[in-house]
Image (cartoon, rainbow, N blue to C red):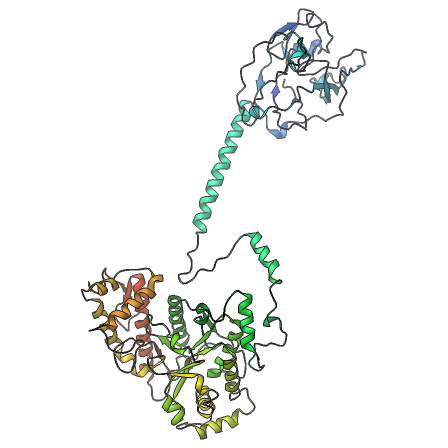
Length: 639
């Protein structure tokens, strides 16, 4: 018959719980010996005679329970599941040397572990071992534990690490006294002998459960770490620039709390508007103050050379069947160039001013971008149908240091002839300053948002040479402002014609194959500089190799022409603008055949894409094919 779970004090949860089979001589089972020849084990593993122990009366089990137990020696069983172990109800503490008067009138208060009647500190109600005799024997007898039996184990004897029971200690000279093994008593020499404590242990079943749990926990942790590293690999940083940020919760909370504590800037002014219809004043001072709050200097080279590219397309689908596909490829071309040169790209598909559509839609987004990017010195507008055909070329910003507007055009045609095609407003650089805001206000006043839009159409038709209609478009309006007010606007405008800041596609696409062949001839040379250009390299090193390639093609026997291309020479054209082709709007200009525009766009996009794909080991098979092939090692010398 299995004995119920032994008492474990809630204050010492580290005490192990064991179960034992019922035996009348077990030290935890109080017995009453009717015969003096009966013996019981003491706390040190030796046996003493009951009469020699002081003739103390102890509570005994009945003869029936002794017969049921069979008089067999007690042995430990494996622990049952914790759900089956019932913890006895905890009662109040009792004082030292407490004696309990049972119904029979006998004193029977003693420790159920060491069988000592002194130093009793705890008592609890123990369930009766024989439920069938509940009517004959009162249930809920009080049992006691002394404070030595309840003492927690030393750290070195923690149950979590003491799996096997240590061998019993040697018998103490005072082992005949059951109380002397656990309760401190004064020694004869006047000192106190340290108490003896039994080493804690875990039963075999509990030890196996503990080891299995530890192994399972370690395996689960390893599996979780492996799955996390596979499913969520560390993202590769941007090849151009890496912005440090903290992903911890504490850092995010701190950043959120500090947002409202930033110094007040022009953004806190309710009268400031992003709309082109509201004028902004003192922008240079406001922008400089904002830069100072961010620890930036308006005159620092890092600020003076910061460029933001702005482009856009219509919000509705294209009318042409292949228009959306071509717009996607145009956008991909701009993304490639910006990635290689570290330039942010803002691509807009919304009409910020409903009345300013088509070619007038660039002014509202540029005005809003100036306010949204006070850290940018230049804003670079590029039409949707413009293609970057030289991925190596970088803007010569030092050349435009004393100007606020850079447009592709010619001074004679703008200021002398006043031709409406003296410049092209499809691609231009504009400085983020008050002068530029004032220029865009005057420029937008000639657009469809102005109530005098019709009058401005007649004015530009009369003033500009060769204007075919009375419509005020963005290009003719800019020519009118520069030619009519040269001191106000023309002095700070740079009309770039030294290279293809934007080239006319009709005079470029037919020469692209010859340009590519001349560049390959330079790299096939056996010189050390040419062999270095053929080396494979990471894409983030593109600008280094671009500078080396420019030096190689500019040297003796290289490729003639200015860097960025031009009408003379065979250098790569910087930007090829497909003006008049209308790839999204439908039918192209009357003087261009649809097939000619389509082939020209595909040839220019493939020419630019080959420069990007080379960093990945591929290239187009033929100029007008969308198929790509792997490039051999040491290309193009091994071609």
